[in-house]
Amino acid sequence: MSNPLLIILSAPSGAGKTTLCKRILADFIINISISVTTRQPRGKEQEGVDYHFVTEEQFLELKQKDAFAEYAHVHNNWYGTLKSSIDEALTNNQSLLFDIDLEGAANLARAYRTLRIFIEPPSIEVLEQRLRARGEDNEATIAMRLMHARQEIARKHECDHSVINKDLEVASKQIEQILLPHLRKR
Ligand code: 5GP
Image (cartoon, rainbow, N blue to C red; front, top):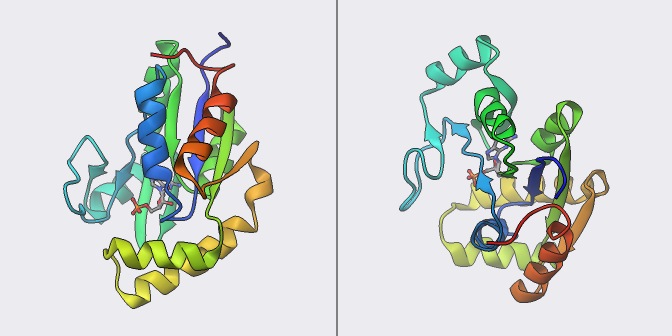
């Protein structure tokens, strides 16, 4: 196996990234990086499992202390990856999985060994249907997520691989093939 890697899955919300991340975590020996965010917890999300939920004041203090390897302002909230969590994994020779946006992926790629995978929805129309079916966002948020999705899809070539998530099983298999040379299976 090669040296530890930062494996980054980037995708517009609704592209199925969370499900694909869960499959990777179940199939391969890898931990997920838990980001810090100022967003409110949704549904069953838990502190320290899905995110570290902080106030804007706490986030900006960490930012001022240069604690973040990367951070971004996405959909009106702050999100960031702590340098300390990356350093800890790499020191222990462990690869880490990231569910972060393209901007964050590009910033990590400047400083670390990364493998970037873009998860693409089959079309913007399908993405819109999935976001509506999820029932989590109001009209304005859906419109903002779709605009952001178009911008991200236009930048997919920045990633090392791009996988279209039309069929979850097919996409999952493609990702497995990409990861097999880099990670051990459970
Ligand atoms: P959500 O609010 O749906 O959990 O995430 C919104 C977006 O923020 C997603 O595209 C997600 O990948 C991205 N994101 C989550 N954590 C981070 C992070 O630490 N850094 C960056 N740059 N983006 C993140």
